[in-house]
Length: 625
Image (cartoon, rainbow, N blue to C red; front, side):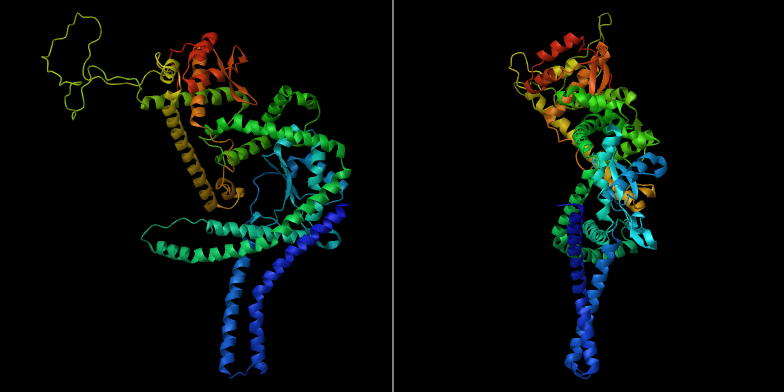
């Protein structure tokens, strides 16, 4: 593009192409009605058949009936497209009174770019920024506002800013980064582009309505008249929604290419317009974007995820990303100069209450990436970074150690032999290897003999939770070479146990989403949001782990619990790697090889050497939860 005006013209041309497709669809729907009108007028004037011609009369009324059916179907499809609620990005709205400096910065930037200022600002727990149209009636928006000269102008879109950018970037870097985004408000308020976008979003929402099968309704009890009516409604609604989805998908396929080219032209025009504003500083800001992506991903998957799985959510994720990125800058030689930026004013100073906004975005991140509840509760409480090691790390290790010992209790020892005093099964027949036991005469107990007197049958009790027991179960016998096969069954049982817990959590998240959809639409209703809770987690925070990896994690947790209880170690937090074991106030990061040697090869010697170096007593029981 030679300039922003050429890009805006290209975007308008593509928008007109989308609107022409909408007009063509409307013309197809009106064509039978036009034919019916022509036949009726022609019959009344005598130009097309006569009023008493039975053949033409039948044709006229057949066309009229078909036109009425087509108009009803077209009206139904149009009503769904117009009224369907488009997908709304989950964000935390920022009122102007809570961030006057941020609004002032955005307005000054829009004035420099000679474009309308965004109508509002919102934050999202992601490393991205964009403009979003929220003028749909379902979102409580309005499409037009008072403009210059007493006219009505389209409402500008909402500016959505990634919350990690506010805490990590400096004020100048944030302004340079937002310049191309804010420049997009110019083409966005053009009537043709706004109408084309509304049409495409309406079609997308209509496809979603057809895929969901309509709005969620509570199912009536069986055997009641309401159940029969509901069954009849489903039978009628299913083909109607199938027809609606087919029409919406057909129109989407027709305007897909034009809509994509329109958005590319809008982005090109916005980028071209922003070239004159802080171009040099924008290059530095783009480097910070890549760093923020890396730190945010590590913070979510390594630090926040363990807390989410335990029913706790870190309430200062955005503040934590600063610590994570500072640590990453310290470790990475390519980022040595980035830590000096911390002396400059951070962009979060533009907020009046950064702590409250950080807490709100942290809760939203837990809902999006883990599927947690929409509000805090007894089983979903916040945790501060200062209490994270004791309330999350220590509890996580002890929960995993308890799960490991529970699996070991359920699994018989592979080398275990029956007790010599144990009776055979009732249906077992005597053999040469197992002769029928004799019935000795009852003997009087010798009270003078030392030791306890065994009374009643021998019962097996769960063994004490010790690290020595775990090492014994995973270590090969002295006369065998270490192979690591003994941990296979334990790893499978751990995988089944964790899969059961994850399935239960997903079912609870889906139930919250359905309940939120019935209670009300959107976060403003006070309940859950179907677009969030019904689909969360939006993507898995980490790839699925194998049974060996799960077993290694549980053995590591058991070793850490033993070190805390017997060697004076302490749980800690590493901003990039998550839970960490502190021995003498320093992190021990050399535990991975000894544990993997035990889990994968069945060789416990490296782990025994590590335990001896740290001073851990493997035979002592550990405290579980």
